[in-house]
Image (cartoon, rainbow, N blue to C red; front, side):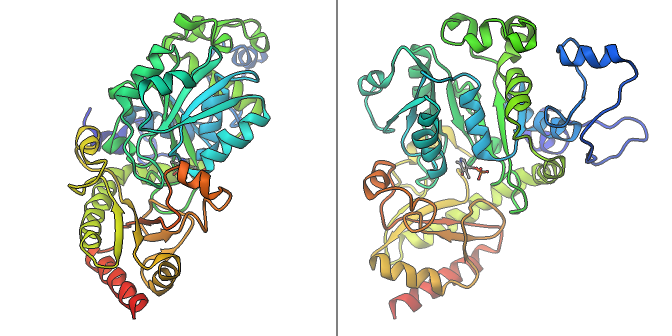
Length: 426
Ligand SMILES: *Cc1c(COP(=O)(O)O)cnc(C)c1O
């Protein structure tokens, strides 16, 4: 059992005799023990077992284990949202006085998290462009830099991260490469195979896939050698007084990072996913391999149609032969990228609004990457907090429309788009 389609159905949960075939929802905050000593050992991390759902829950753990198996990681934790996943991935190894280097073409919510909220906690961030030279990127690093952050396929620009290059640069500076792998999902891209160290997800998108539950996940490759840079990572490599002086790297070895995320951050900051939502993710995961394939195939049909339409000024979709990302797509995403593309229309802002208002099947939504086709204008919607300059710095043209292709028949989607373009042109 090692093929990815099989892992989608089975990894993380193997029922015994007479146990539920489908993953049960363990809707319980607490778990029972026989002796006071048994309970005490759990709090000292001397025994493993469930005691309180803010730290761990069997439904969540099964789903996290499945995502870890799909990514080829050694462990994972579910979080209440994708935002929480990226925040916790940073806070697990950064504290006030530390510094992060991040690609600038990332999701608007993450730009705010890194650029606005983390600095308020004393963690500084320097943003770099994906096409910056090695020398320029080297200059962004400081002695107190603790991680390099990027998105494997950026939202909304669908730019493919050159993971091998950024992993090399991160490792030359003795820090891990943390990548948000939300858009490709592990079906289309497994960043650990290219040298990334930590993966995050907004499971709200394709992994859920039906638009029902907000959630996130952090996955640990187990590959980063924290002890080789022990001075940089005291939280992992020196005694944790809140656990009687335990040292994560000594006690948990390769699983130090992910164990600390659970036992320290979840304990103190919460943000665990509800078991009910984890159950929805379980259902999403069981068809993820089929759905992502269809999303991508349909998106290529729509992108091909749009690329030759006279009303379209430009379109970005990595599979299109002339696309600036096509070479990297063939390398990192040979089975395809995902169902998201972005484009600009020749008629400008007013024309674009007319077009979006004329769509009937494709809906205007603050969402991407689920079974319903949807559309959004980031400059007016998700990214409206960013200035034009910040928009341009993030690679988002003011006329950029993000289009997410769902699981409807692609011919119906194309017909809807074609009609709306005609109405807007009339
Ligand atoms: C949506 C998204 C997030 C934030 O996830 P939420 O689940 O909405 O908190 C983070 N990164 C990427 C790439 C996203 O698309």
